[in-house]
Amino acid sequence: MALIVGGEKIEDSAVQREVERLRPDYERVFRHKDPEERRAQLLEWSRENVIERVLLAQHARTSDIQIPKADVEAAFQQIKKQFEDDEQLREEFGTADDETIKEQIVSRMKVERILLDLCNNVPEPSTDQLKEFYEQNSEQFRTDEQVRVAHLVKHVNWQTDETAAHQTITKAADEIKRGAPFEITVAKYSDCPDNGGDLGYVTRGQMVEEFDDVVFNLGANELSDVFRTRFGFHIAKVYDRRPAALLPLKQVKDQVTSQLKEQMQNKAVDDFIDQLKSRTEIKEI
Image (cartoon, rainbow, N blue to C red; front, side):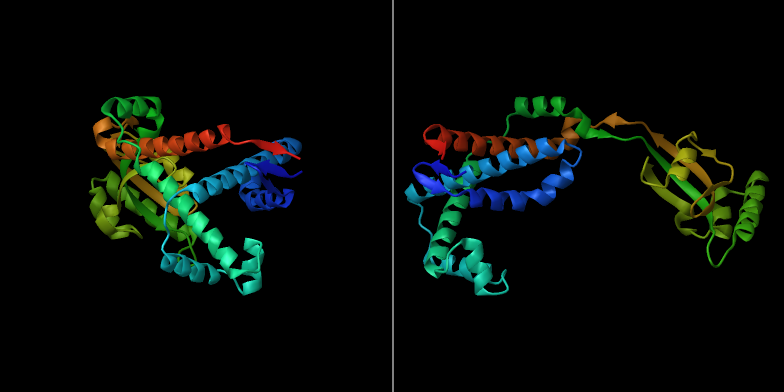
């Protein structure tokens, strides 16, 4: 079914090309949806994308934006490099005429300028807007629970079998129980002795599950028993714990500002396109 957008006929093939362009990412993200519902939504999104591109192109043709010929030629040559041959290039643009392709490039560059101007004209978020966004999206600005942990490890691999690795780490554990400092024992026995085995602060999920299950159940300055992971045998020592916490606005202000500004820019573009739709006749034939 074709579309008429502001008197311009858009063939169904244009919508179908957009469907195929969106399909890989769409199917990956919405693979759990009902197939019929998924098909209908993909078609609707593709249709809306095509309509919006046509509306922007129509508006660009009426604008007084000037694109230097040198910029158009440079863009044309750059685009040509993306295709194996001229036939593929012309198929992509739906024409065998280089001048028509360049006209489309001019239209695209004008649209880019229009959208860029819209975004640049969005004011900086106010203090109240930042605070509101921060409070409404507080989960984004929370830190996970962390522990600062060190470990003594004996790997089980082609160089050291299970029995040999276990014997060595058991010997190390015995020395620690008799009063040997953990850090010195790490230097003496561990396969990863740098920095006394200190891994710094880690969050749950950063290490393998077997490691997390032990260290996140230790208190500050507490030492574990010998335990096994897929890598080998370990003894872990937790030096400090940091609970999950909401980072203060002052600390994440740049991140909040960036996210809110992008949201405001997207809304400015959406509002502009809605204005174009409201004053343009769009119908199916």
